[in-house]
Image 1 (tube, rainbow, N blue to C red):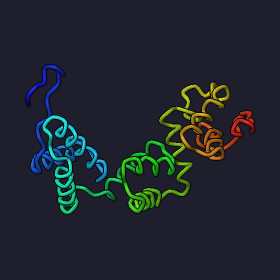
Image 2 (cartoon, rainbow, N blue to C red; image 1 turned 90 degrees about the horizontal axis):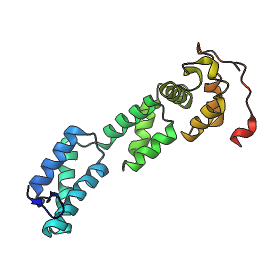
Image 3 (tube, rainbow, N blue to C red; image 1 turned 120 degrees about the horizontal axis):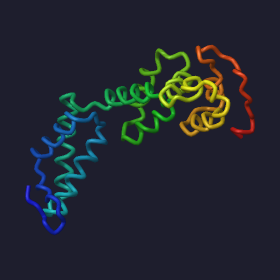
Image 4 (cartoon, helix red, strand yellow; image 1 turned 90 degrees about the vertical axis):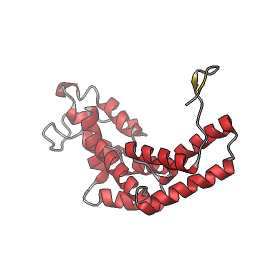
Length: 198
């Protein structure tokens, strides 16, 4: 790769169909991707090639679409598999279903694949919002998962606000924060101000 010393960074090589396919395969070896996500990666490479070598943008875009079609036909690129894996990971880390849907939409996954992924991930969950809120509290050490249980009442509003910012409803947030350290429900001596969520 040649170096443009005026800019101090390597000059992009011109794109070809074979180079685009190698870039796509290398990317998929390292990261899971949706079709739209991989299209964005490849089109960034095309744009660099257009700026550096006056590559025909329209022709390169057809090469990108051909690469994506081949990868989909071979099963290496599957939006449903990507959406399910991403949804499962986000749910495990404590994201509510609405936030998962927005994250997948931002990655370019279609509505049908998102619906199927959420149905698959949430199939065995009785109360997905509650389970996600518990996972989020555990990860962030909020509410019943605080290291110092004596600090729970003092941090109640702060924990409630953190859950609200993460997209949980007031009812779910209060239910999770009011769990005892052993997981049983109860007020735990906490004073809850209804006007907080208003």
